[in-house]
Length: 508
Image 1 (tube, helix red, strand yellow):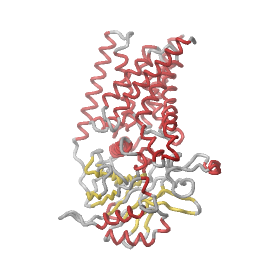
Image 2: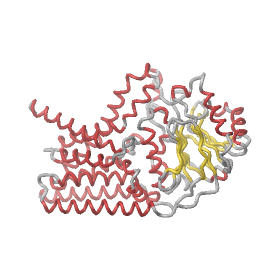
Image 3: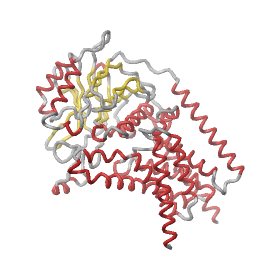
Image 4: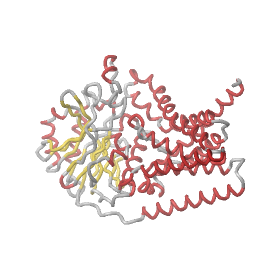
């Protein structure tokens, strides 16, 4: 490769990186989904014009670096909670995360170039990228954050997730963007352009009609149960500080004891966020009695750390009106490097431990998804923080819940984009499973989400307070809740195999 060709390759990777950054603007806090289509389409145009698989892979890798770099920019925030100690790591962490995730997109583009002829590479590119996103949700415990399908949360298209999930919406986004790129490709004939435009319009209007129709269907009646969501708004740098930690506990007790609005009933269940209590569960006997007295007859469900035989868990505990622990749930899908360190026993000798763990050098994983019986509020499926990102964890529950509880502490990640992106994903879980989601967050956004993913009520980011709301009723099980991503995975596999067979036959 000559120096000129190397410079041209670098410029092309930089160009696709820019288009990836534009595509990321469909996510919160910008919420411009049309730019996701435009950015992806521009990048796909460049990728499809590659001369060989390696070139296609490099260009798609640049696309991924730009896309993930902007979408996941909030990853730098935890490093600045203790900036003097960890701040220097922030840019490296963001770059290597974006570059690592982008490798999947690069490999997908290289594969797409290899298995399909030039006229059908737009199809193979959309399919392989959709497949790469499914793999991203599983590889190394999975990290499906930032799927392109998430950009549609505030549109009627979001309702299509009840049929094929947010991953299916992401696949559709790739397909439409690839069609847009092919329409302007120089080798496309007028007839082909007409067919692609027609197909795009049919798919767009058809999806819109289905989404609007589902959104307008009658919702199930609310249950005769009132929940109180408590949001203490504890900044992360003070949350565990010995001079301030119990001030936030006192604030939560005061919110728990507060009288409801005139004419409104007292809550039937009070919910505190993730790690709401800055000590181990075994050491909270006196505090639990105080919490129960404040709740005035209602059970309290709260986030706390739990120790058992030198293992520590990020947990939720349910106490009865006497302050006795009735049930616990231990988070089972932990955040790598945040809540545990891979090869942690070895790295512990060098003083390397997980960011978020306050006990030991990392949390242990619980046994798996389970339902918590909460009394009048029925069976809840608890999801602690990161667990709400994974539809497969919800499908692994031993039965269907009446509602999902998303208890989280997003204070680690600032107030710019991550809390809003996290909320969007919780809303997708409601749509995908036809279940209400009750989201209780330390600094916000705490919210009551109905089975169609709409916000019934919310406490703003950075606001301390509480919210009394009735528990929405559950909708019927959705197709996605029954089948998950398997139909999409089968469709992608069959379609790619068909393209490969077609190319092999033509080559003969």
